[in-house]
Every structure is written in structure tokens, then in C-alpha cells.
Length: 156
Ligand SMILES: Cc1cc2nc3c(=O)[nH]c(=O)nc-3n(C[C@H](O)[C@H](O)[C@H](O)COP(=O)(O)O)c2cc1C
Image 1 (cartoon, rainbow, N blue to C red):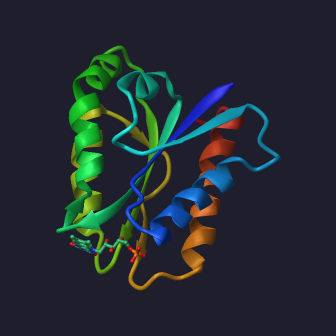
Image 2: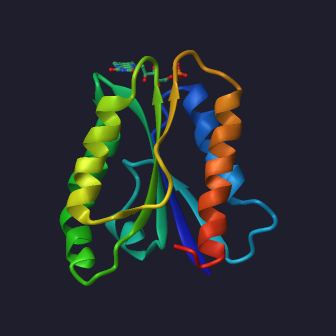
């Protein structure tokens, strides 16, 4: 079984729905060999990141940057993950940002860190921007499905 880890910061009912949609897509019944874990950045242990085969990072944009929760996560896991990347195990990942207005600052900030880690981006950043729309749910479901299907078919 491949392991897909969804790290999601959900400070509101809307963001919880988006995280659930990511998980729902990844748990599509057509996908056989992928185990999906949804975790808050605050609760995710380093070992869980080291052991996963791919990640989806989901954060709100706050003050033009990623959430403090996701930053705390990176601060805890950065050096152990860097050690792993030195052994040429570039981790596949995708980023989803929920932003009231923009999302650019978060996209740039997360990529600075993932570049340092030499993680491999496997889907372009999805920014769910502006007033909440039900369409965001479908976009998240599709992204979750795409990443899980890629793992299932050993594309990543
Ligand atoms: C303290 C705070 C700072 C925020 N800063 C930004 C920001 O810089 N850019 C932005 O696009 N949205 C910003 N937002 C909006 C959040 O991204 C948005 O509230 C969050 O994604 C939840 O969306 P929801 O209303 O659909 O639950 C901020 C929200 C809060 C509470």
C-alpha cells in the first residue's frame, strides 16, 4: 500500500469541507492501493511525513503567508525531511490554498520551503480564492483523486 498524507489546517467550517473533499477524492473506490491519512499540521508527527509516499498540503492564507499551523509543521519536520531528501527520496507533493483575497504569498512561501527540501511538485497549486463557492469542493475532490490515482498507478 502507498501512503498519501493530507496535511490540512481547517480553522472554519468551509475549510473543513475542503479538506474533507480532498480526502473524499483520494478515497475514490477505484483506487485500490493507497492508504489516506488526514491530519492537522499541529498533530502530524515527523515519522508520519518520513513514511508517506506523497503529500497534499492544505492551508489558509493569513496575513499574506501560510497559516501559522503549517509553518509550525515545517519548522518541526524540515531538518529530518532534509536528511531524507539527501538520500534521493524526493517527496511528491501538491499544495492547496484557501484565500479570501489572494493566495500568492502563501504559494511563494510554501515553494521556498519545498524547494529547499527538494520535494517534487506533482500538481499545480490550487488556489480557492474569494467568497466560498461549492465549485471549490469539486476542485478539491478532483485534486485528491488525481494525486491518489497517480500514486496508485505508480506515476509519482
Ligand atoms: C487573521 C486572518 C488573516 C487573513 N489574511 C488573509 C490574507 O492575507 N490574504 C487572503 O487572501 N485571505 C486572508 N484571510 C482570509 C482567510 O484566508 C479565510 O478567512 C480563510 O481561508 C477561511 O475561509 P472561509 O471564509 O471560506 O472559511 C485572513 C483571515 C484571517 C482570519
